[in-house]
Image (tube, rainbow, N blue to C red; front, side, top):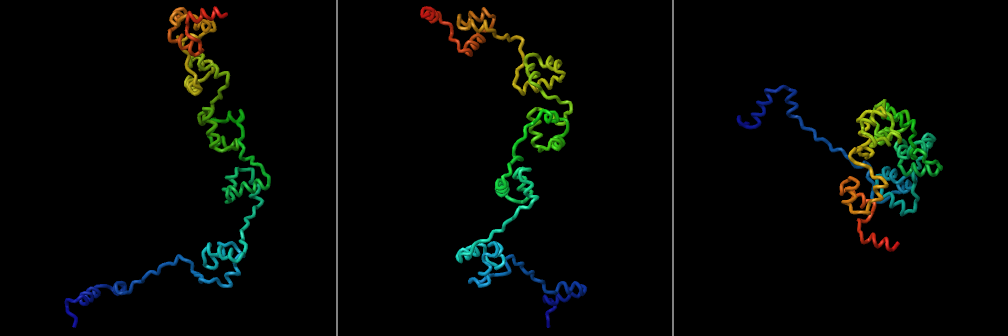
Length: 282
């Protein structure tokens, strides 16, 4: 007899309270999941069979290795050992792919055709097709006038250029994006910068003061200083003929300004003895 407090008795009492479906679920044998095999189903023997040897050289080594269940290196060594030449798959070019050569950059052709960049360049040079797509097109004045009038993407579509090219050109010229009223700067307008105040230049050119300010800063042109007097040829002729202090008082300029001007023009400082010797030598 089974003791009343045994494990079997308790299990029987427990199962008696469950339904038939739950009893089957508790008492059935769990299934052991089978491990999926990731290796090749076909395992080759150590020695090469005759039917394997006859396949060497009939297809690329990678295809033969997969067919006979051997490694790529093993197939290659066996083929070389028997002196069988290798087989390379020739991926022929279609007419549609050849038409792309030269019309697009080589990298773009390689991306579209799924070939390597070297293969595209080699095929293009073999057919003697110039790399016209790789040559940069110079920007014309008409194209520059379109910059900033619309978005860079729309401008790129109109000019048949890349968006990056349009963006770089627009930033190089200092043109804001989407500014339909933008006007390109001319050399005659640039000559006015720094000669007059920004307000005066803005009035003459019918531009905003901020536009004048940004253009002047971009070109590295300083504002005119009314306190600074330009040096004339007569002023420069007096440099070194007298002491800097005396010349500064005569020209009503700072002594430092006279000294810097003399040093910039590489004029030696005033020396009475040296000048007397020069007069004697003459």
